[in-house]
Amino acid sequence: MQTKYIFVTGGVTSSLGKGIICASLGRLLEDRGLRVTIQKFDPYINVDPGTMNPYEHGEVYVTDDGAETDLDLGHYERFLGVPTSQANNVTTGRVYLEVINKERAGAYLGKTVQVVPHIIDEIKHWMLKLGETGDYDVIFTEIGGTVGDIEGQPYLEAIRQLRYELGARNTLNIHLTLVPYLEAAGEVKTKPTQHSVKTLLSFGLQPDILVCRTDRPLDSDVRRKLALFCNVDGEAVVASQDAESIYEVPLLMREQGLDAITARLLRLDEDFKDRFADAPNMADWMEFVRRLKEPRKKVRVALVGKYVEHQDAYKSINESFILAGAWLGVQVEVQEILSDDISADNVDELLSGVAGVLVAPGFGERGIAGKLEAVRYAREQDIPFFGICLGMQCAVIEFARNVCGWAEAHSTEFDPDTEYPVIDLMEDQKAIAEKGGTMRLGAYRCRLAEGSRAREIYGVDEIKERHRHRYELNNVLRYKLVEHGLVLGGINPTRDLVEIVELPAHRWFVGVQFHPEYRSTVGKPHPLFSSFVEAALERAEETGATSKPKPPRRQKKIHLATSRLLKGDAE
Ligand code: GLN
Image (cartoon, rainbow, N blue to C red; front, side, top):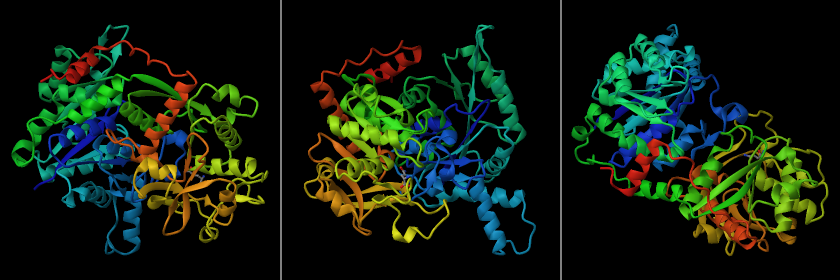
């Protein structure tokens, strides 16, 4: 069966939520019975986002196969519930690297290697790659950046060629633009969208559907105008109005028929007759949104990290709290605390009001002292503690210093000469000096220890979780730590590495060397996050610190649509 390709471009500005629109429409098509995946093409020169600072680019999302990817892949996985891989994230850097490697290997047989056709062909090859597996009916390709960017042009040309080759029945272009409201004029403006569509046309691409990001409903005049001047069907002008939660967007898109118009243009009902349902089965999604919108309780936890100023730096952790909280009927208020700000003098003031402490992943020495203070406080005050990657390493360092009494204990990442290197590089890594390509990345097995808290929480004896780090708990010192009461909750069986540490006497104290936050999806919150939120709630109830969730902010008109859908009288 011919795979259908949906190309999603953006106009006017970046940050309009292309990823969320792809994920939302993807979910609707999935709920109508199709097999869907989403890939992101980023026009920057970095080969992957792994070496990019979280301040610049937000979180690096890691897939099972160990690819360091754009955080939009996290949305794709959370919305669709299916894993992505290296093939789902391609950058200009990777495309050029492939072409240059081929050129060096003589694959072009002495020809002059050029953007057209060689780079464009390489892009097309990657655009089609997942489709060729036969595993998917619909492939979304989201193009990073904005139409008109110099670096995005090869991607538009690749789309143009593929549309020409595969035909209108098999390809679709959705263009996401901004329709701003001008206070002074008292009206919404369509001109930026018209210009952006003209730019797209100048590359030979006519959008089929316009998704217009706006802060208010679009009236029929505006829709008509957009349709007429941008040359699209009236019903193919879809408003993406600001929503309180990204998880409402599939409902809003459904209400405006984005899946229906997509189905009509791509003839999905004819071409996938055997499995394409008349309407999406959104029961699970609606149940999730209902729980999300109507929490019964609220609990506050601290997220201690050094990148807290960037709103996307801990994206998957924040989303994991939303997903776990919704499932438990709890609104988790995440209070982000800059680790640099924490000291022995103010830790009580900063953390006494929270019911749980999560110490975040990270690289480099800045903020470590504050993280160690946060661990100590949580351990001593019996506040639920969750350490992820560097957070787990900090828990081990703090334990070594303050429980074992090894005052100088440290990670060799921060003190190469420490007497007690409780966190250290593995012997085989020590010879490697380069930064790229030396990390333990992707999914690894972990056997859970009998009687451990982790085993109880997961309910199985072996798991697979994703990693992204260089340093490990030092196996030479591990038994000494155990003698002092640290429990090793999980071990990687192939390389005998400690993956989980716990303190059994504590109410909830778990550090994990891996990143559970990458595996939370809608309807399937990660068990460690759920268990941590439950423990925080229990602590808050004991100390009288829970509160009723605030009534939702002023309901915007669009949310009436959501609430109608939730009540089940939308059809
Ligand atoms: N910096 C630590 C390491 O490389 C932890 C990395 C992380 O938290 N992802 O091992």
